[in-house]
Image 1 (cartoon, rainbow, N blue to C red):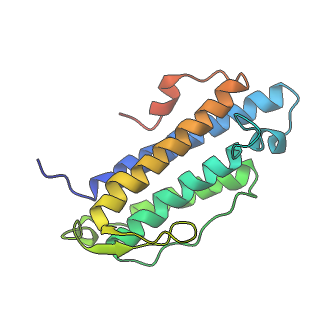
Image 2 (tube, one colour):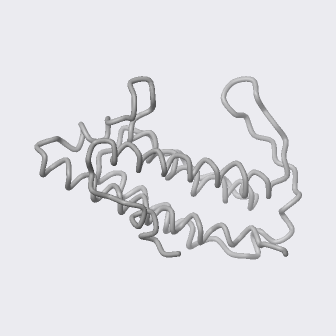
Image 3 (cartoon, rainbow, N blue to C red):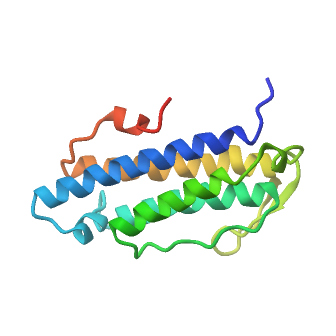
Length: 169
């Protein structure tokens, strides 16, 4: 079975809806519990793990930047993790708007186009573009969204598995 790389655009769009949903519920829980939004965005699972704000930043960046790279387009500028809740909601909306500008034609024939990218320091693999999008980017989006969910659940936010389907099946 052949899968179009463009089909991942809809998948990423739905994950952005899921991120917005759990962010909204987390912010309401924090407010109701007397916590600031800033406190909530700094929650983490354990002390040496990146906080909620980092998880949301990665989801926003990966859903925009990796499709752009794979399509051979300039990658949108990164957002940083210093945003507040309103800023993250705006970044999610911007990412969704960006995804709407992409077309199937921009991804046609790009599955095996080599793409080299620097990961951290000293690791610069060259992989087929399709592998970057379907394996690397998708795995990271799900990992960081699941971690954001785990952080909020660990603090008592009343969310469940269905909240990770807010963007639809």
